[in-house]
Amino acid sequence: MLDRLSFFGVMRMLVIVSGYASVGKTTIAKAIAKEMHAAFINGPATIERLMDEVLSAKGIDGHNFQTVMKKRLETDKAVDVLRKIVVDNEENGVDTVIELSTYYSDAHIVEDTDIKVRHVEITLPVEMERAQLAAHNPTLYAAMNWAEHVATRFPVYSDGALFEQNVVLEYDNTVPLQPERIAAFVKKFIRNETFY
Image 1 (cartoon, rainbow, N blue to C red):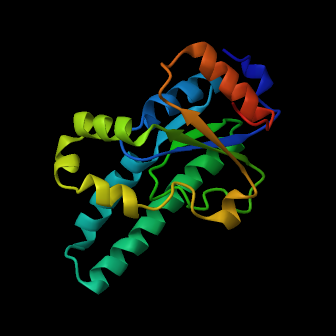
Image 2: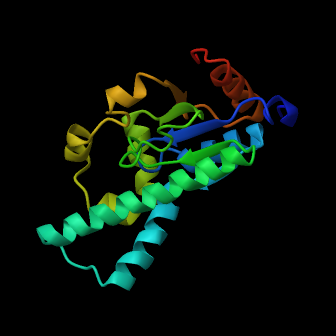
């Protein structure tokens, strides 16, 4: 594990870990956070819980255009809460590793801050991804047409204007998770090197 002194007071970093459903985002993000002595935030769970509470309190329900726009506004507010957590961590000398689904990956979490950002995309071959999704989220898998889903989904990192300024590294999750591999991965992206 990396020496905490190599992080504390020297650099503040946000690592955004993204990928499609059931590819291993949470597992890898937690391992990276542990290696970095960083705070881990499960972004989708945090956003969804906030959304459930706020939408319920405001009585926002339904699928008409106005309701969808209201939900979108509340989602933006929930993402802003994540941003405030990350900025608070930075002010307190803590790095953050945040797991974000593909739908939140393009959120401008640290605009107008000095926090260094690294983006990590967790990847699996499509057939392995399908098997993982079927095993870990059978309800979601049963409700979708897999071939159509794969053909029409957005790429994980679709906002070129944002991501060209940062480092996007792929982590191949077909290889078993090993502490040594995570340590090597973290050292590479801290040095702004391309990972193999």
